[in-house]
Amino acid sequence: MKYFDAIGALALLTASAAAANLTGEWAGSVQIPQRQSRPVSLWLDAQGDSLTGYMSSSQGNVPITNATASAGRVSFDIVRDYFGEERRSTYSADVDGDRMILHMPSFGGRGRGLDVTMKRISTATPKPLPPAPPKVSLPAAAPVPSNGLAKTPPMGWNSWNKFRSEVSDKLVRETADAMAGNGMKAAGYRYVNIDDTWQAGRDAHGNILPNERFPDMKALAAYVHGKGLKLGIYSSPGPKTCAGYEGSYGHEEQDAKTYAAWGIDYLKYDWCSGSTVYDYHSMQAVYAKMGEASLHSGRPIVYSLCQYGVLKGPQWGAEAGGNLWRTTGDIRDTWESMSHIGFDLQLDLAPYAAPGHWNDPDMLEIGNGGMTTTEYRTHMSLWSLLAAPLLAGNDLRNVSPAILAILTNKEVIAVDQDALGKQATRVSKTGDLEVWARPLTGGAIAVGLFNRSGAPASITARAAAIGLQGSGRVRDLWTHTGRGTINGEFSAEVPAHGVVMVRIDPVR
Ligand code: GLA
Image 1 (cartoon, protein in one colour):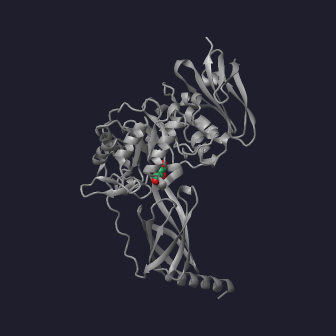
Image 2 (cartoon, helix red, strand yellow):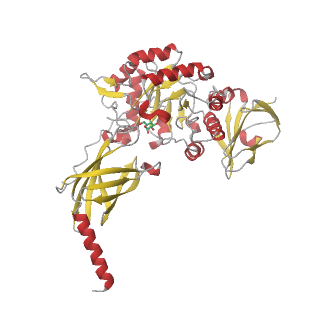
Image 3 (cartoon, rainbow, N blue to C red):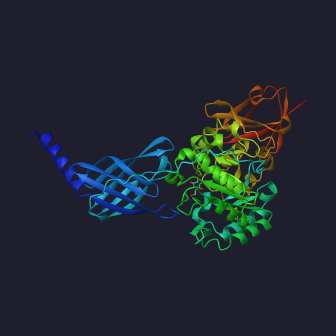
């Protein structure tokens, strides 16, 4: 045997020995900060140097592929079907006897991965992967009649971005107090929306129960209404929400009636575990089901679809009864996330926005600390040009004057809330410099000169590109001053990651 063959054989032997040691069921618990912990188990079967098995979690059972094992280290891939797209993620683990640290990659490459401690709880050879339970397919649904709500994009606040599972009755009341008193209500903000983690489970009659953080939803709604504001809530068409709480599966009408009885005015309905029970090709019908249920709940309820824009959601959101629909995955409080969602992922969506029906590029991160004031101004300007819902996502009980000034800029909000309901389109792009324009009621045009680069730059908007015939008076919506007249083109110096946002009124 040649030297290298010997090394190879030795390596193979070690791999086999290492793999052989892995057979059995390994169990652990995934603890994502501020979400409910979720059990995960790994069933491994080591035969010679082959390692097979599957992973079991609330998302179902998925086989592992490409598994390799060498002394103390295992690696394998999991391939998932993400709404028709193949998503492969690579897992690895450090093994020490009956314990392993499983390194889980971040979902979709976003955010940080997670380490989970797994313990071997059985050395039995796993049984073959049980067949996946059949998925429910719903017949195509008739278009849900319009509920007549959200003639302009909803404005308000949502608990998720800042508070995750720390949302409570107390927080919602204090947020309503703040919104009513700090100028936001006067600027048009209305909805105070409870996101995920409010549910406890169901009573013997199947009625949804709030958990100990929400002792009395009806009283809470009355309190919020007493401030001249509205209350929103959150659920999922699947059995579980994204954070692992009780979803509405099989209780859609019952839940809609409960929400109405409590005095709820807005429902965000998040796909989450929907794919564990439904064939996702039925998604429109699944959303229509809750659309109908809310429509007949006995109370006007704004209906917000959260299905991340997959399967052409923006094209059928309105038919499913939606007043708004998410267009992307979750926003994070970073320039990269916000600018990618706002600039790159909304490009073809303008045709689907109209009074009563809005594209939702996700909630605002303004004031959460991960971006500069300049970047937050860009965030507010872009969302307003996009006719996006303006749902603040920060702690309203404690807002700096600079952040409050951004959130309550009435001239920018007037663009967002313009009655024509036309979403801006990108009219020019030169490297990192972009011009977006939106027609407004009465022939005016809102224009954003955006500098996505890291250095100040001069940006020019041409009259023909923004749809201006003749000349127009230019008003700066952040400095609240006139900027002269546009004749052919308008240029401005724009700071790095910043915006100059103007309203142009044609001179007739
Ligand atoms: C998903 C949604 C978020 C938020 C969380 C709650 O990730 O996209 O907006 O509602 O679920 O778990």
